[in-house]
Image (cartoon, rainbow, N blue to C red; front, side, top):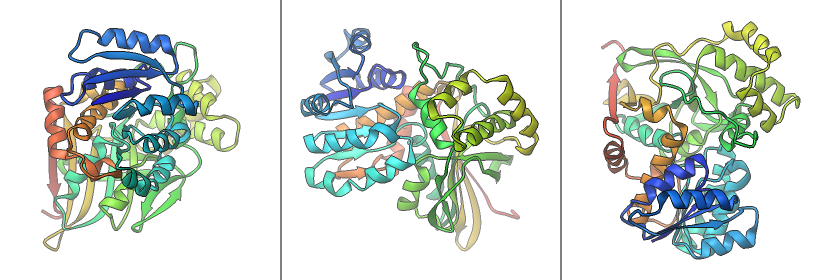
Length: 395
């Protein structure tokens, strides 16, 4: 198939394109980016591989340019963020051009809107998978593994590491031009305002950075903090937890306190998402002192794993807690581009070879075969595996 790597010259796009260029189902790869020079450099770096690689300038805000590029592709791998700005428009364009679609959407708001395009995608015969990165993506598939051990599902949490539980990525949150990266802008969007969580089995909106204390199998105990991600929205539809569900950050107390300061200033209108992202990369003395004064309010992560899904419920009439976590993934999780781009490309493999069969708009857990995915991930990244542990209270 002809694959359009949209945003393929960005950090996550380059990783996804590198892996996609070696997938059996890819016969031509086009690196598309609004920066034509960056697209050409990425294409040149992949030249000489098993498939032809070309570069193309595509600005997703230019409808004519976007439709022309999509019309010549069988599938698009969309890594252009932030998705609360660009995700819905690109998916709509892909449906209009009959182009199969996969992205790494990590904003809950467009996820809701994109799922509403399911009927249009099915009518067009388009297979679309949204949110196939690390979180969401790998996290959803871990949730499937955890929930599969239960007859009834009560609470379901997914979690990813910020600066605890794995070696953090020390890459700047700013691009070469000094502007904040899309991932950083997204992060500021999702620690401010209200975010989607599940409470009492239904979707509600709550302020982010709420502490969630967890006592998990294997002696993993600590506190993590809520953040706006798509997992509660999609897992509510697919796995239907009857209690609570949220996406969590495994983060040190110091960082949680600084994010809380940024949240206050974002909500008060003293910062925008872009300026807050710059501040997070280059903390100001005043906000650092404000954060230090409130750090004691934020319990730490304790011994929580860096990346996991945890489910509580019952089996055979008895309460059970199940933990599904990645092992051997410290290096992978320490690089945001790798931990997001590699899963995207491995998800694309299932989209291209018919593993994702049904037309429509699907979250990862409804379309991607988890067993195959984790086997592919272990082959791509030797040593990475999934451990599932469970515990019955009082046992």
